Length: 174
Image 1 (cartoon, rainbow, N blue to C red):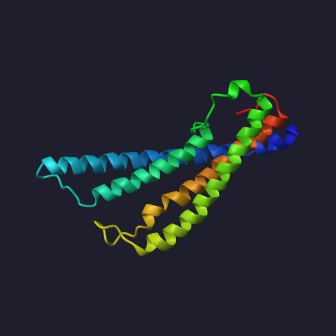
Image 2: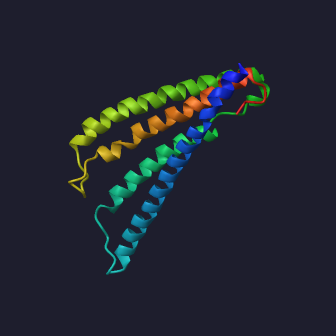
Image 3: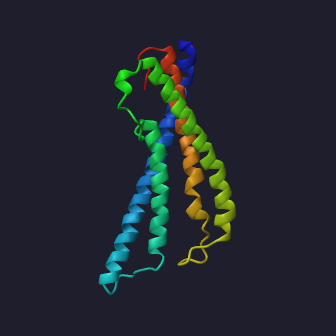
């Protein structure tokens, strides 16, 4: 059994790269948010700095990307919100089972986000446009949901694998 887990552990660098890519995207989005917001605020008080009408909608769209992508990142780190007040009173094996069940529900949510989010983005979002940027489809406003669903699936697969591995190999409870 250990050789099976050793073989599967060889794909861990792929998860590391996926995590770094999503984190880098979040950082880029944050920088863009700060720059656009700064330009917008300065544009209100400094006459030669433009205050584009589209800044608010774009900043909100970028924030929605960051919010859902950072939630996917939290899955990998095990930093998502959870109830741990009773964990000290429960047997370790039961905690592992409960973590596995929670991860299964999160995986279901991730698939719903991927499928339904894609449907919304390609139907409802594709038919509408931003008020301040009429040539830009609202597809981009709905697109973070399926992207985050996909990222959550990737990181949930790793989390579920780590929980299952923890049942068979002692000291592997990450």
